[in-house]
Image (cartoon, rainbow, N blue to C red; front, side):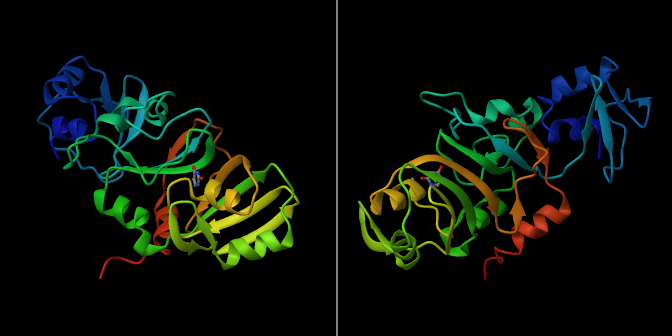
Length: 246
Ligand code: URA
């Protein structure tokens, strides 16, 4: 692939900006400064260094972010900063086939929810992971205001009625870790679903953290606000739970 196209595809700005980066001598690979925008470069295993920062080539971007509290999962946040501000600019401006450039979150977490957020620029992947049809299990650590009873756990497992929907929704799993700490697994992603299910049993969520999606656990080395690329192994763990469309 031509060097200019590589930089463009990775989100380093317009083609003209990519040319300017190359001309300025800021782009290198394997210790060699790359000065020709039209040079043909193999992308397999390519790690560019741009302005001193290493940037591994990724045809498609798949990343995990440890979402901190106080951030909205929106490009146009209303009251809080956007989670997208936690990502480097190239991830936010990678060209895509859709109307919005850059990576998009797979489903949303509330402003005050913390934990595992997956983002990608692969529209099909996002659809597959977020689609209720595929039932990707999501594991939440829920801190409640009041102690949860065995009867509440039973109700959550058998189905509770949410305020706007007559069809009961049930947790796929529900474990009482302590009286005020539940580990809840959901396979749907209805609006404020955890908070509304807990409200349906007369309780209230004090803190909410997503620990896992499919077989993929939030990497414990990531501090709130930090992100990393997903590995092939991570993707396999996620995908195992979401079979492809028929
Ligand atoms: N359920 C909620 O209520 N909030 C979230 O952020 C995620 C699931």
